[in-house]
Amino acid sequence: MAGDVPLLERLAQLPSVPVATVEALLERLGQPQADPVIGPLLAVDEEGDAALNPLVAGVLAEFQQKAELTCYAALLEGLTGIWNAAVRAAVVARLRAAGLPQDDLLLRLQAASPTLGFAAEKPEWAREWLADPFTQDALLVQQCVVRVLLALRGLGEARAGELTTNEG
Image (tube, rainbow, N blue to C red):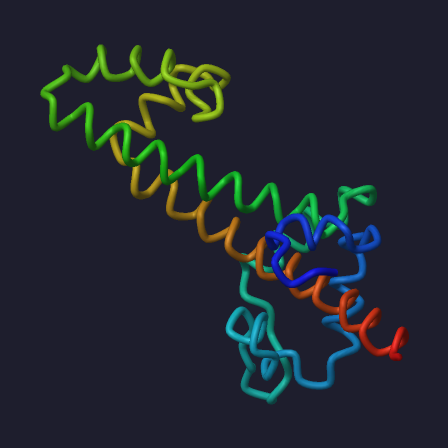
């Protein structure tokens, strides 16, 4: 892989890595809490055993439900979720700063972009989100960050395998 190829393109060139390998990796690592990428997501309980953050447990449960999901696809899902939250926050801030009334704001958001989630969701969800966007998106962003870190660690493990078996 050439060093000047953008990161996502380089990651896409890796062999398909099922997300199931991430859970196996967590089990295989002697001290996963010491891993520089995923270690901060883990804790140590009173007995000194690794304990999963509830966000990590939730993302791993999602991974188990989607046997066909790859680490690359999980990475893209996580980045997309974070991107959508960032754009939603920026659009709302601009429209509110312009003095747009709440009902008009909701209509503008629904029309702005289907990827923001407002057009596809139920109107109640959109109203709840507008009432408190921080609370509504904070958990989503945290879950997406966990998804990105776990997916990157899985992809990193695959790349390490390539680097150590294709020496020469």
